[in-house]
Image: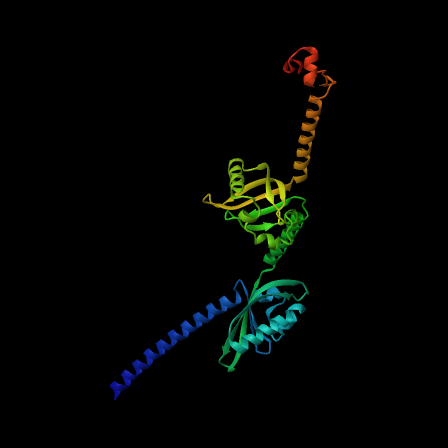
Length: 325
């Protein structure tokens, strides 16, 4: 019996040692959890189903501008921006109804009333001691990111406003012949109803009179990478429009063409004026060349002969080429 008692004592001592080790491990894990929870770089809040704050880490307290003890037993709704209250309530109801974690962005308010943006994640937590479901939220301050996004949106709106108010057409297209973007001037220039209508076009088929003309324009763009003097294109109604294109390619890191972009200027009136001038000169020369008088055009400053008609050459008995200059 003494032997059995000694064996039993040894077994108890081994069990006690294992219990002490287990207790030590639990305390170590607990300390690590406390460190992770309290000193995490993001905010943690544990809340009851009634939206009462039960626990808060240092980061969450700092975000809300309070010490942790002053956060406990406060309602989360006190720190939610009024316009976002309904959204938060809806996500909380969905969390408890489905058990599915919720993630969304919202505005919160510090204790002093200042507003900041957070990325919030909510998860259910089983409280074994109270046999109820609480939930925990993670708060990540994204105010700076939101400010950058807002600045980018404002810049984009300003850029879009500038583009849409330009007199020249601005476009970006793919090598396959589809528009990626066009400004309002481009839409008006080609007689379409909207930007969306132009974005749906097949450029090769609907804006050029022939595939040969388009191939020639692409060749010029490849050779010049800049302004192409003038070429004709087709409006929606089929009429001819003459344009000048300041074009370039956008390449990726491997040298592959991503986009073709440029600024189109409508020079139809200028081309018409040039043609009218050529016709006028042609009629003038025809008239003057057949006039019954000897006629010359002389520069008043240099007294240089710029033009003579055939009768003037006859009068001076000199070839036309010798009279000029």
